[in-house]
Length: 251
Image (tube, rainbow, N blue to C red):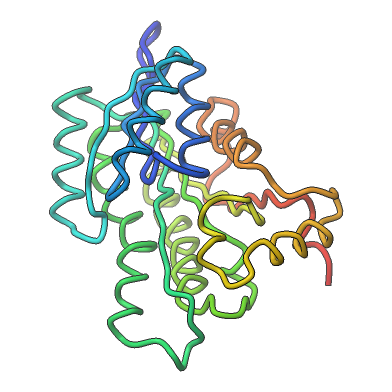
């Protein structure tokens, strides 16, 4: 639990861009110190840090390749050195290979699993050492965990593994007063869609299909993550909250 009068210490993996950036900025609004993890794009992470501090938060950049267990351990050690504790872990960083199951190599499969699924386990292990009662772990997943999306085989299975791991971690950490949940976002217009052939057309199709009439925004996802990290969500444990404007309700 965060000591009274002290700011929260928050780690957002992949916090420099897209949904991760929106989450980092939302925590900044309450004055949190956010450890912004990034791997390649330092410039984007530095811009997010500047914007975060302009909103009243504090920022600390942590470069780490989450495919490498040693780098996750180093990241945990840095957080321990700087803050001495961690109140919230948001496991957001993800990547993928856009291929069908018979076009995937074993190397590509391992790369996606080690980027999207395993880091939740290793980051949670590090975070749990620094968390007390009231600690929060929130993972970002996607609708491809339970639906078949063309070219999404490795990513979808990695997200399904992440959701299963969320439930196992939740049961393990519940006696310590730490909650573990996941947020599954619908189509959010971030840079990742540029990797898809005809990405803009896919986004427009998703918008047209969504009962709410608009795409899910990164800020809307950030609000749900922020809620799950709040005291009001103490009784929510091991759940996947879908934030997609009703897209996944349609047959």
